[in-house]
Length: 100
Image 1 (cartoon, helix red, strand yellow):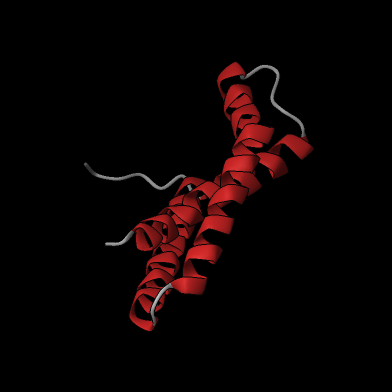
Image 2 (tube, one colour):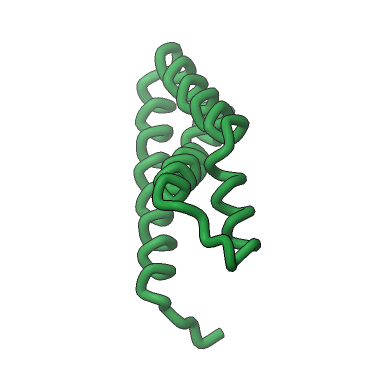
C-alpha cells in the first residue's frame, strides 16, 4: 500500500491508545499495580498524544491530495482497523480466553 494507506491503517491504534490512556489516567492509576500504572502513564503522556495528533493530521493532509481510489482504500483500511481495535478491547473487557 501507499504511505497514506499505511498511516490510515495504524491510526485507530495510536488514536485509541491515546484516548484510553487519558480516560484511565483521569480515573486514577492503580498504585498497587505498577505495571498498569506505567502503561496508563505511557499512553496518557503528552508525547504519545502528540504522536496520535500528528498521525491524524498526516492522514487528513494526505487524503486531501490522494486520488479517489487511494482515498477509498485509506477509508476502508481505517474502518477495518477500527473494527479490529474495537474487537481487541472488547475481548479484553470480557476477559475472553483463546484456546491456543
